[in-house]
Amino acid sequence: MTLRNANPVAIAGGGIGGLACALALARQGFRSLVLEQAREFGEAGVGLQVAPNALSVLDALGVGPAAKKHALLIERLLMMDGVTGEEVADVPCGARFIERFGNPYAVSHRADIHGALLDACRAHELIELRTDSRVLDFTIEPSGVAVSMNGGARIAAPALIGADGVNSAVRKTILNDGEPPPAGAVIFRATIPAAEMPQDLQHPYPTFWAGPGWHVIYYPVRDWSLFNLGCTFVTDRIKFGDGEDAAPNAVLPRFAGSCETPLRAMRIPKSFRHYVIRHREPVANWTMGAATLLGDAAHPMVQYIAQGAAMALEDAICLAGAAHDADGDFAKAFRRYQDIRIVRTARVQISSQMMDKINHAKGIERKVRNSLFEGRTPEEYYDRLAWLYTPPPYVR
Ligand SMILES: Cc1cc2nc3c(=O)[nH]c(=O)nc-3n(C[C@H](O)[C@H](O)[C@H](O)COP(=O)(O)OP(=O)(O)OC[C@H]3O[C@@H](n4cnc5c(N)ncnc54)[C@H](O)[C@@H]3O)c2cc1C
Image 1 (spheres, rainbow, N blue to C red):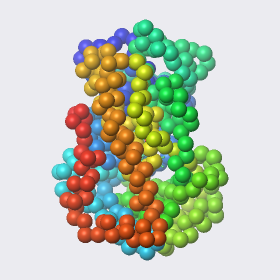
Image 2 (image 1 turned 60 degrees about the horizontal axis):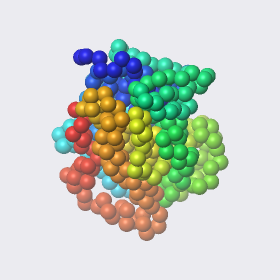
Image 3 (image 1 turned 180 degrees about the vertical axis):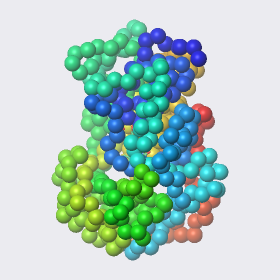
Image 4 (image 1 turned 120 degrees about the vertical axis):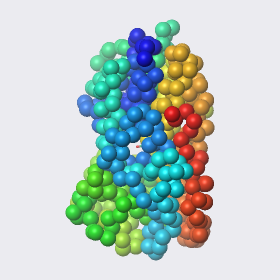
């Protein structure tokens, strides 16, 4: 493949979105430089649900087999009523699901998905990876962008992609729309060694418990050696900082109305890690000339349909396709990329937020929620999920 840019495109952020973007650009012949603020490349958190649309992007980037190697291809998606313990919704993810969406539904350790992308980036001659490199801001120049780095360095690049997450510095220069507001919920995360997880709670799929004002999910990762546990609680009162430890006696009372089964899992960890869920309303623009945003920097969302990383992956492949079509005219390519992506990502942001009502329903709304799913056939579920799980045409 012929090299299409002598000077590399700068990508702020080496998370799932930034690395996928570097790889997608490289596969179209574009050089890039990934600028990651951390001392090492890595991922915060443990579990990641990888829906078929996300797996299709990983396949298209050539890392599908590596990403799936330690992932669990799940049998079903299950929602339980956290008060009564009854089953609310059951979506089979077997052969018919795979045939319909082109891929299974997986759960994985975040580091396994990120690691598959990182290995492929490291192996690609068109990608340079730099750690300890924090992007502060940028200016638009006649030749592209000038990126200001920590330590006073400036990098001239033909284009800048802000894949720098929910607190994006690149977004600040493009949109200046303040800090991402709390979404009204916090999550307490923990891992449970498989040996400590009761046998009857060990299932080859995520178990999701929907309670009034809270939800809990657990599933196996890393070849069943660990269980990822996430306990989300709706609140406007934030008592801990992001990433701080929380003792069980600060966590368990919030889920006191739960039936016994999820509590059995929640009582196991000696400590939880606390995060404030943040999001934004969709915006009508996230591009400025040869600078644009991707992933959480562009469209941060609550995690209630587990699609944030999937959207970052789809963005990456779409952006690289637009760069190819515009033959390296990045300002033109970024406008096209944004036009293609903005409605789908806004729909996912809005749909995720709407799941707050389903996942956390109280009183009569909880009973209405349960009745909505009664008698639904697998095909009826698949029809409702098709807009989300079917990979868009540019995922090739
Ligand atoms: C509790 C929870 C559960 C979730 N579960 C799922 C799920 O199951 N499935 C799913 O698809 N999504 C899920 N998501 C969403 C998903 O985690 C994010 O959407 C995804 O990680 C976004 O990737 P990103 O690359 O855009 O940003 P990030 O993963 O945030 O990566 C940004 C990178 O940029 C770096 N960075 C930040 N600022 C700078 C700077 N100024 N200069 C240089 N580098 C910088 C950071 O260090 C980081 O490495 C979940 C989110 C949460 C909060």
